[in-house]
Image (cartoon, rainbow, N blue to C red; front, side, top):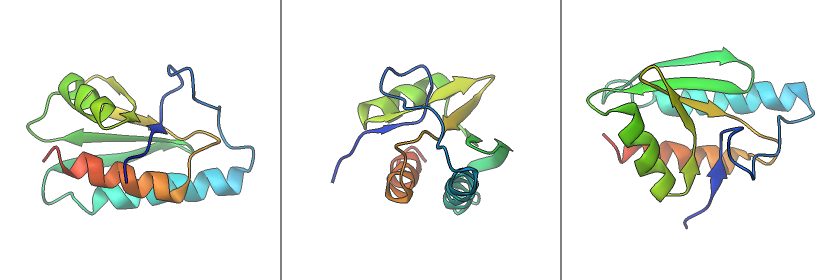
Amino acid sequence: MKRTVVLTPDHPDWAGPPADPNLLRRLTGHLAARLREYSQEGIDPVEILRDGVVSARIAGVDDQQATQALARASVFCQSQDGVLLFSIGASTSFEDLDYVQAVVSELL
C-alpha cells in the first residue's frame, strides 16, 4: 500500500517534531535500525544526528537522484553533502518508517 511520508521541514505538510521526546527518540532509533539492516547492501553509514534526524548514504546512488526517486514513491526527505536527511515529524508513525525502509531498499 502506497503512503505519503513527509520527512523534511521543507515540505508544506511537515507537522513539526513530535511533542513527546520519548516518542521522538524511539522513532529515530527505529528508522536508524531499519536502514542499518541494509548496511551490507550499501546503505552505510546511517547516523543519528540528533533525536528526530537520521542521515544515510546509499552507495553508488547520487543523493539528488535518490531524493527524486524517493519523492516519486511519496517519501519526501532532504539531501545535503551526499547524504539523505530524514527529519521525523509529529505525524510520522512506526509504520511510515517501515515503508521508508522498503522504498529506500529499492534504490540498491
